[in-house]
Image 1 (cartoon, rainbow, N blue to C red):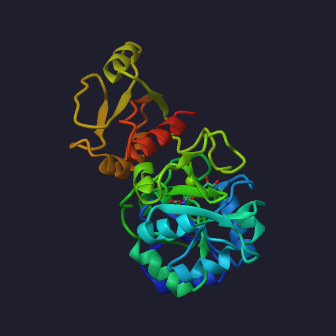
Image 2 (tube, rainbow, N blue to C red):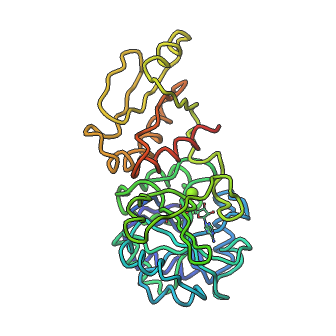
Image 3 (cartoon, rainbow, N blue to C red):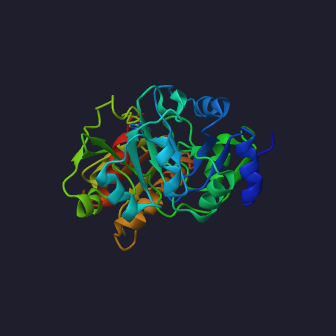
Length: 320
Ligand code: TXA
Ligand code: MG
């Protein structure tokens, strides 16, 4: 099967309606999509990604009218968040209706829903007319794709089309918020900071990353390059130690820095801007992973705003 890079929304809508899987752009990362009414298409998402069956999928919608049939209850705080952040990098978990197949919810009684902020995919969702399930378009545990080319590297000849929407503007997956008796809980940090959410609905708890029952996708190992990644407090000292062993080293630096003994230094944001750093993170990991380095050295970013989401991904990327 030849994989086409295309921006033909109508063509992609037909493929989805026919039960095929395609990759779609969103503002966070590219997704591997299947229409929610076709069980075969949903199951194929799991096999293409080699994703464990107990890891549920996010359902994507283009307007609020598509939410009601998917759920039996929308908490008041969820409505407030939807009003402010949709379309955008926020997924919310609701009690699911019967319309949501067990394959999507992976046996849970809930469903995660989001309205992505990408004009091509909003047009696609409208053309299809039925919501679409889409996890990130990467094999299980690998780095998420933020460009059509990344998806092609992973799934060439395995899917008929990639809807090419350019580079993802946010560059980190959506923040996932669930509700326990109306109380909001962040299950996954992501493209909207905890602070921004709290500005709208007040204090929010963050689920411990090992609370595997509520968010089965939060595996410790995730988003990993194949090159060894070292997280250190002191990049210069780590380079000094590692270069002694003649290692070919790549560095990911938050802001401008010079490390002479490194083979390559990638700066996430020259102006030390967390939004820009988030947008660059996966792209940078993809690039460094292709350079046949012995290791990649990096350091946590300031742990506030999107910095906390980036640090979550760095922490998981380090498990190899
Ligand atoms: O930004 C995103 O959210 C991207 C784009 C494509 O929309 N999608 C994405 O999907 O990151 P995925 O499958 O890679 O991650 C989905 C996460 C998983 O950790 C999964 O466990 C969690 O969402 N999830 C899905 N349904 C859930 C539910 N009912 N309850 C709790 N967590 C859920
Ligand atoms: Mg993912």
